[in-house]
Length: 547
Ligand code: GLN
Image 1 (cartoon, helix red, strand yellow):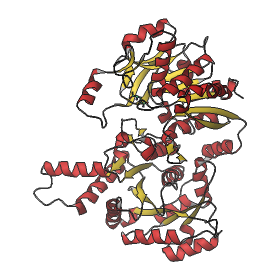
Image 2: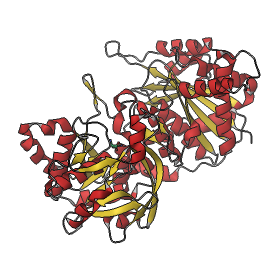
Image 3: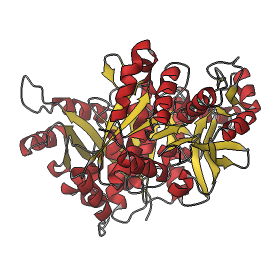
Image 4: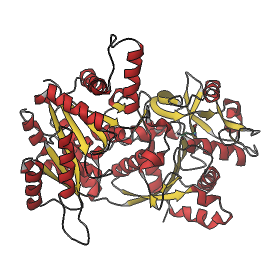
């Protein structure tokens, strides 16, 4: 069959779950035996998400082939249980860069290069390349932003042009929001009508409207949307708020969405297999217990609101591992700057109430000393601890300072003049920084890690070699490896090609679970295949006291 394209755009406002909708539509088509892939289009000028602060656009997700991209790619990977690569991530910056490079190379054969059609054409070229490379039956294309804003117009233009060229192979889905203002007490459809009109003015008629709301959409409102938005009533899909994102595919199927999409493309339906997914949702709905996990970070404040998007893959990885043990995780945010104050002792003592603590990745000096104190507390009080990237680096710093007696040991990221740079830049990275080459120059993507036998990591992975994803500039300084090992730190994983430390541990005789990884295992955790290290961490957390 020739590839089919489903464009997904958002109406009314952002943050209503376009990414989860895209991933879930992918899931239900995949469950019918089709080959599915997904593309994320982000309208910003940035070439990738790597140079953005996570409080801007949430977590920076890293693909197997080393692209720093939008967190939605992570959602696609988790729902479709497959790796999504660099090609599937499109930004305005990437599109313009290619077109300008082509112009410089005389590839337009002397003609005037114009925003329309040359920019949309490049967008279409990229989309079709994904379809071809992956031999996909379905390509889902999520257009970031909300209809009506200037930024994503050229992408809608590309979608319109694609429909014109392949009318039988392209459909549109609008994910819209239906507010229920407290003071009125009724679900309102008008914003969705406006959004549809705006889409219409870009030459696009939605085939489906995913009606997001606090509550299910009733018949009366479906009818209204049908009439005013020019769409069949049965193609208005009710999508109320639910407890877990993993329920969304099942909810869509309650409205027979996959069948309706297939019929829209004149395709015959195939048998559906969502058994394992259903079992997972069953566990989520009926957990047999709870595990309390602290996450010590700093990227969650936005004005007066708390943002959890910055750590989304970490949260999901905790959930997957917890679901494996049929328990519900309770995640407690530890704002690390709070632990730097003199009066932090009481706060620290409260950490014994947790079953386990994760110190995730991060950049810059703010909050560092607080994190180090939390790590020290975990080490001394035998609280299961998992350090991810920065978390691992800080565990090394804490150990160097307090066990190896290397006073004021530090990372050169925080103290360039430290006497004991236990975490430091490699030569190549020094050059990048000197030449101000920041974008896309960290150690990125999957690298080999060889695991030492008889370690916690080996016990978890049950294999001597893994590939894990990276995103960092600094590394454990090999000059101090001996000092650390002599005092009992175990180098449990290394990358032999570059001779770099990938995993550190404390011996089981001293601590039930103290593991730090230079890579980010969270990026490879999937709902039905929890990551081995997270699984081992949760297993030990469940055994730990906590109260
Ligand atoms: N800031 C550290 C580095 O660049 C850690 C990065 C991270 O945690 N992803 O090496």
